[in-house]
Length: 255
Ligand code: CIR
Image (cartoon, rainbow, N blue to C red; front, side, top):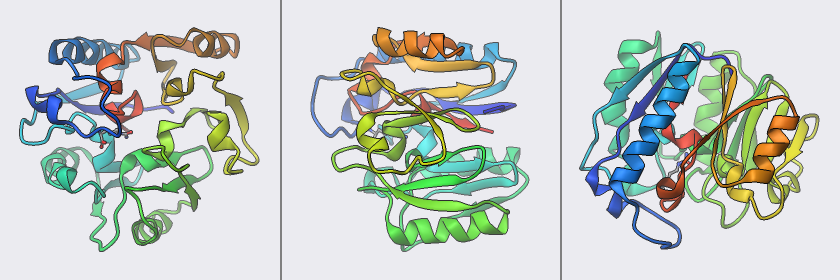
């Protein structure tokens, strides 16, 4: 959770076309831009260098950069999104990572992996199979991770949940914030788990970034739980991103 850098992308007016599991309203560009500014400012306040890429009108989900790559200390791995409309986002991200990372590998297929399904903890990489991430994709990623000395464990994203990290986040090397429904799968054995209070499941997608925990605002019981556990919490308006099933982790690559 200690990072020198992050890469984000400004949302485009085409966000209204962004993918969503359920239509709960049209996201508002001005609202999303204001939230994005607050998000970038919070990342920068920790001393990290934050790259803000230009909006990409051709890809309505492109501000959710996390899904395009996995960044590890050894280098970056370009993903192969399971959502066909998002496949082209990877090539848009590649030059930035090639400029910033020592080594850049890629998932060539035929499998698929999206970054939202990957949780890097202090001791391993957990990858949740989901509607976007399949067994072949996990296997290809595992090979690259092994070459770089990482242990990768395949786990499962619950039915009806977009990404593995929709329901969990790393708080420190061995502490995870998780919904009860995800933890019930047994995937966090050996970790200290903080449960997101019932009814606040959407707060589970947070990020620990250096000294801060960034979480969506509007979830007072989760904020209190994290505060009591000793974390310095910054709350960001996630109302518009939530309409596209997006949260704190989706909005940046961190390394
Ligand atoms: C999608 O369905 O792909 C986007 N609307 C949301 C992606 C959220 N990304 C993430 O959780 N890492």
